[in-house]
Amino acid sequence: MWVRPEYERLGRDFPVLAAHFGIAVDAALAGELVELIGVFEAVDRHVDSINDAAARAGLTASIVRALREEATLDGAIDHTIDGELAASVAALRRLTARGGDVPADVIDNVERFFARSETLRTTTCARTFVQAVVDEAAPACELALLVAARVTDAEFARFFAVLSEVANLVDKLHDVRGDRRRGEIAVRAGTRLHARLAAAFLVRCALLLRLAPRPLSLIVWGARYLVPPSP
Image (tube, rainbow, N blue to C red):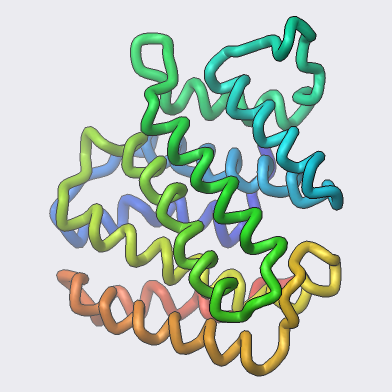
């Protein structure tokens, strides 16, 4: 499964960040987290490719049914999930299933992620858009922490939640004009939106540094992510 290099690097760096809290993360878990990031990216890409809101809602509902292994709807087999998307759903099931079933909190987080992403696509309000950027990070973060539950603790979970918000804001600061140009969002990507994104980023960076056991190391680590990725 293809993952954007900057996202794969973030997943690979999870052990480095956890080590700041005295938490050891093995290579196998780091690989699972990279795979989880790839799942979210693939699913988001497929949903983004659909222009019609009703069709997007139909696809996201199909994904949730597939996670629950509900193969039919009104007696008809659902054929909307195949190829890379089917592989992504299967990977998410494998990474999060407990005792053969996907737990309810995983399903809830997936549904929350889809709801926040839809707000990002459809709102024309800069304030609402920025809040949705922050809110979208939470379910993805919680899923990562569920996968890594055996090695994480409450302090690291709080830190990682804020880091996830910062990462989402950086991603939007880099990509929001391109998202608008491609028709993936409805909000105007002008100075007001960038100012709101930057303000939210700075506020959360300050909180992140207060939560970090090694703030200077965190700054050195995070600085490279501020450079926009190559097209």
